[in-house]
Image (cartoon, rainbow, N blue to C red):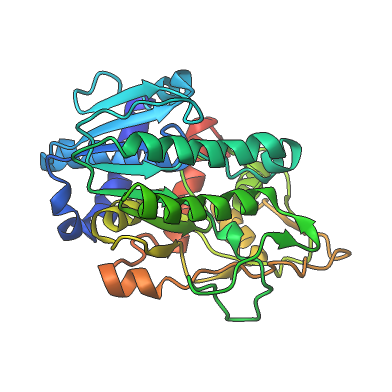
Length: 355
């Protein structure tokens, strides 16, 4: 089972890496650290680095810093024992020590689950605020540091979009959602301010990304995002439930593409810049549900709750990624149909699904 899963991920890495391998040559022999190392982003960066080392002899050293070593051992057992990939048990809110040989840092220690921010807003905000401060203080003592990539969030955008409109990095941002505080948005806005402060006072090289929505292995099937909900329904042989009229627009980038974008931006972005990361092509939730249903047998139905109207707040959430495309030659390496098919197949394997 594990060997089958490893081959599954490896093939995803091959597809995404082949589209951007020239932009990643400068990673050869370098040392990276990623916080939030057992999360979705951390797991995919780990898999991509592992692939690059195994298939292309890149000799990259990667430190994964996280609080949950058990999760690391469960999700990435094939990585355990690798001489190039090492786990550091630490809470970024504490007085962390970053290995002195580190050249690049990806700071991704935050929980994007909206349920967590609603139920534990203090924990949510301190994880981002204190964690970011701690990482920057430790990074300021490194003599071989080249760049830091701070992972912010598309949650910092709050205006309502019209049809075919997309968020660009220059759009105005706000920390108020429908008159109520948005704790996750607040904390990420603060992290971006900390980046500016650290560049000024600590003379650190820092760039930020604002990630949008993603899919693929290493996301929990019960995560509160539409595509996970749809797959969860179908895996459990329930009708795929859409809790409104299905007109909400979202986009999804596959995990292996995300890893490539993170690494390329980390390597090549200029100090102080901010980049959107995501798929700029949008689909209605009804379209996404239909694509998920097509991966199961013909008995899989879609249930629309037409008594509810699509939420007017952020009913469209799409990134303008022109900046990343022009500066780095980045693009989508995995189309939406393949992304959904691969995501569904992963969960089918995980749950030993039988039609």
